[in-house]
Length: 275
Image (cartoon, rainbow, N blue to C red; front, top):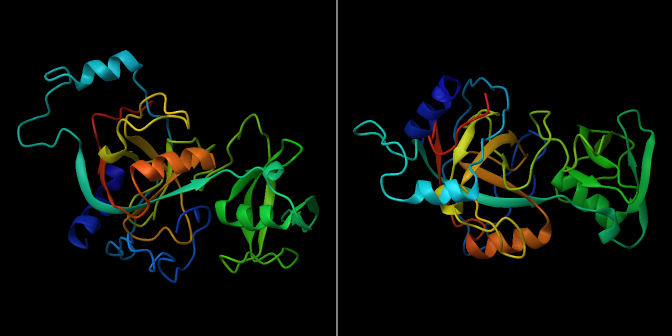
């Protein structure tokens, strides 16, 4: 994957949950008071080229178990890491997809980029949506970040920005839209600093291998992700995993706590792409 070469060199040499939808300057981590806080070095700006976003080819459960057996997977060339090219230790956080029906209280308006009202929603839902980036209205419609600095919009308390939203086809974007313009997917999409990892890059994160695929604890994750989102506080060596549901976020956070730190690999043979 030659498109990530410049970013890999930078990370090697140089080398906030849920704020995952718009690039912009950062004042640093908002978790400095957390005793678990992990602060990797911030990578300086570098020219990187995004690649088209394609899907990970997921192995069937029986195949995943077979590949875990000694000698089952193809052996990499001598001297190469079977997990791929290591970028180092990254801060880990999680973000969700809020639903209007889960919120109550005083109403405020969501606006589109023309300052036309999209919906009246509980203020608490707005204040979560403007951080998470995408969510579902009571009508079933999906809304997602469209533009910041909208004069008509309510101020987002956590980011200090005024956000306008776009209404999306819930069939095409059931979980919202990422910075790559693609439909994001729970437990597959991650937000990154695109100066470090270009959008469209496949990532292997071994700490997440074997984690459950739902809040009931069933299934087994393969550790493969795609960089297809970014965030105002996703800076430097930081991956923000889209978990979708709050209940699942709690399960993953209990297993791999926020800010614990995870190892990120690119060009991993464990994560084949649907080119």
